Image (cartoon, rainbow over all chains, first blue to last red; front, side, top):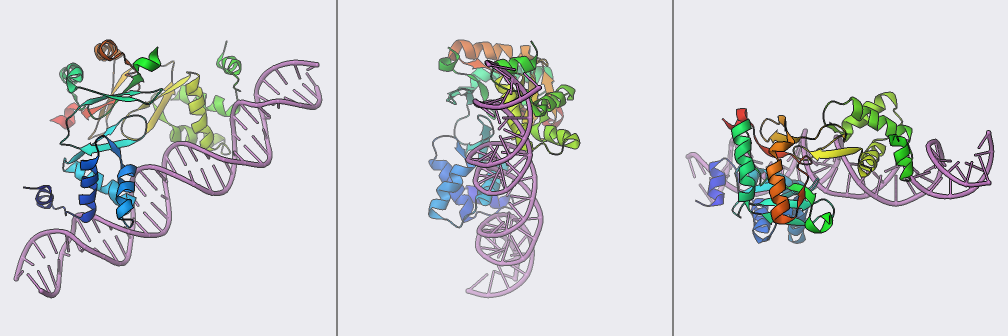
Length: 136
Length: 136
DNA sequence: AAGGTTATCGCAACTGTTCGCAATAGTCGG
DNA sequence: CCGACTATTGCGAACAGTTGCGATAACCTT
């Protein structure tokens, strides 16, 4: 069962606009912003409105096809959910970002679950701080 | 040496507007948004523009008097730096937030420092996930 | 293949935040 | 205390992102 069928099974429709959003995300290697996606789509389909892209990212997230992460301050970054999970270190000073394996974050997740009953999604937000270069 | 003198020593000026921002933050028990601060100030000083509040929060942060945290998705929250540090758990579903002692986050900070040379500021961003109630 | 239902769209208006600029007002030296 | 210097302000416009709404088109049924 493809994405389209899955969406229909959930009362949603597979539209040109949605297909385009998924296409852009498939081609994108890293986390992308909604604005990037919108710009990329508008290059070939100028009539497609940014608001449609924003709404579709949310819709696709509800079905679990994409997820978002808050890397640094206020920008939301999107990626397809089938790419491997990982954590993020973002340098407050130089803005560089580094991916880290989820296993480093596991002990914290386990502890939060045990002591607070909280199921942390540690891939969802980044850890802010100073990278090796900027700290020295 | 008070805040005012410290600011002057850094080539900045202590203005009515800045004093008001600090006052609001002193009275606020928890993390506050720039909009809240602005609204609160405008109640008694309607001529003070929101942009001034935004600029002053940044200026005061540069000197280390206030810090900001990104609790849930897109809102920036501010507090005075002299209030005690703590981590944050934010529920993605019900929006509730819980403060946790920094020591829970310490092991992760230590590991990121050792293995990646990264000095994490774990009070700066929240951990997103599902709270006990929403997870069950 | 055609028609009805309604999820989705494009648009325009709106929110919260940032920016450029001329006017204002803290600060400092005399 | 006064005048000069310039950081800071208020304003208006710009900005990214969101929302309401009437029009459109994807889907289902026949």
